Length: 406
Image 1 (tube, rainbow, N blue to C red):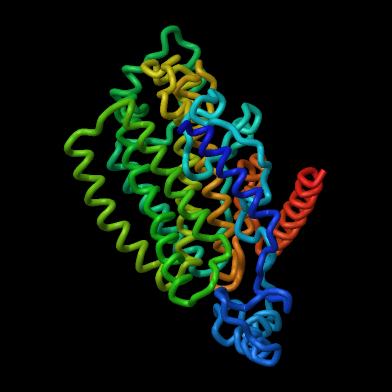
Image 2 (image 1 turned 180 degrees about the horizontal axis):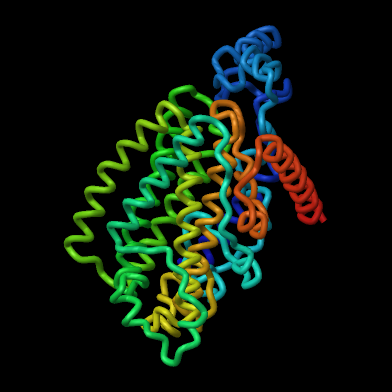
């Protein structure tokens, strides 16, 4: 049976489900409260219904909801339909064979951003000014780690003067000998080390919030999805650059050591202060955007001649939906845009109430231009963004339902 047939069958099954009444948390008297042939009297059914909230998820218990609604700070997001992202029943029922459709080559299981050329140009090196003592501590730690990493990879944030760039040919070898420029091998060494660490925070945060959700028997509010998408996105960065050059044994040893230390350190940090952990990642991504911007600038100025017009790896073309004639420069620009997204998301999440607030990006990501030019949302901006997106989702769902009915 073909993939298209299976997908069509699944779609028909979903359409059948739509035609049936859906049971929700508020049971109607017209539906049995339990399955099977056993029937209940009206008085018994009322007793079971009144007793049900005491056995439900903590998030659904009336006293818990009342306490959260009366808390000093309003919760970002809400409990209604769509709070954790679009559901398949809200989508179009048109079936498509993603395996044969060239426009959807590479069926990635998690969402990844696709950029237009103009969106890639909006990414800027911006930073959030630290406010609290924790913010300042995180900022200083990231600067220290950046300095150590620069020393380890022989990197210097050096801007080549225009007088040198006007020479023909540009004295690239001389600049590299002085330690002012990185060779393509050293750029890859730096990037592979960076990306092998960058995939850790999202997985750690997603894991801990996953366990917390099960431990407290309540929904997570969409945080897990976004954090795991971030981890997957960073892993794809690493796999992309691994197709260009395989790391040496020395590089693999450094990756192993760095992951061992960083994973455990970040795990403990997230366990005790997830807000600080997200702020740390936001500051770290600021440095990542700065590094990739420098790399892009060097390539565009001809200071990394080995990468002039190098074709993009196939894995990158599939993942970011790049044109077939895309180059390595296009790939690095897409990677930089991803890092700007992580910068924006983590700074925004750090501003939320880590226990009560919903993830405002569970429904949809913020505009690419906004992600590229600003450091993130305040808590108030996140609340407004979540309300707007949930309203749009509900309107789209109602419109889609009308089209199905007609």
